Picture 1: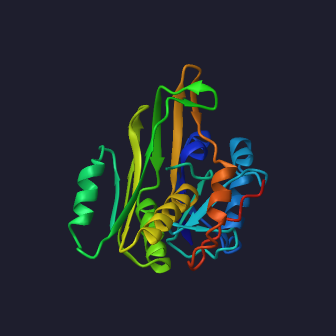
Picture 2: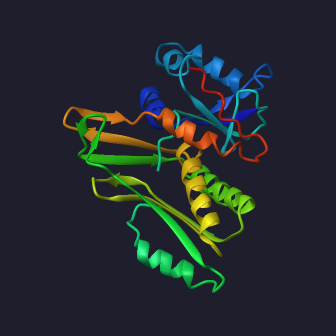
Length: 85
Length: 163
């Protein structure tokens, strides 16, 4: 399946990307697994997405935890804790 | 219910007048306005850039206003949030709640603002004499929202902060 990745704020800047279309094989089913997969790219990816980092995830534009099950065509976003208002 | 994410400034008086004009049952309107300060964490702020997540931002603000309407007997709600480049003295956000009596409007206004601070996908980046920096989320904002309990949504769970 394919999912749309999106990155915002400091995550976007550090990765040098606002998003990409990601093709997943059958073994990757949750948001947490995508995070782990992206970390294997190394360098900044491993640093920015590390488990120790305060990071928020949204799936189809709703805040989620890492357990959320992904569907083909879904949109998964990674960003730091929000600071609006 | 009015929800707006916009680059342009807003007129608080005009917004409140419009709100009041919709329903003669309104007996109380409480509103909050957030501004860009000239100092933060010991440094002078030159400008502030507000980034957001188009699409999710509007849904998130709508959900917050709906949650307020579920909890209190409100006649109308309003949330306006600016994005883009702002300067000290600029208005950033306006939240308002209208009800028959003041108690519900006061509570709903604070509730919406507290949730906006921790749930709505906005990020502030400050420009100072020493360069640019992303504003860190405040622990006090998480504490402020905790007093309201959890939102009634399907799979919202902000407890993934693993620090």
